[in-house]
Image 1 (tube, rainbow, N blue to C red):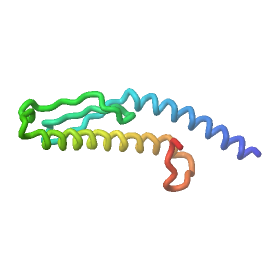
Image 2: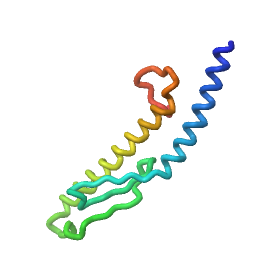
Image 3: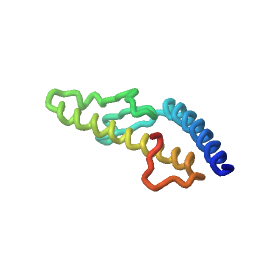
Image 4: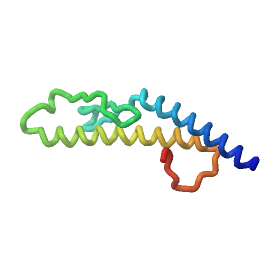
Length: 107
């Protein structure tokens, strides 16, 4: 029973730390770029786009498809960085727990 009590205590501490981490990540902003920086996207830790900057030289009728592709690439770059940061934070949070491999938190 003593081990069960310790496990419950650890779970409560982890839940509290996860809530703190999620709040912290919501305030975090990460930038992504494509086309040599001609398109830049800023997303928050929740993966929501906050800003988009486009070099004016890309704003011609002939380059619409290129511009669309660069926006998608810049967003994916930023989102990938956010996901990497989240994985690092989760590793720090769960480092002391023996969780099964492949278990993704939060559930």
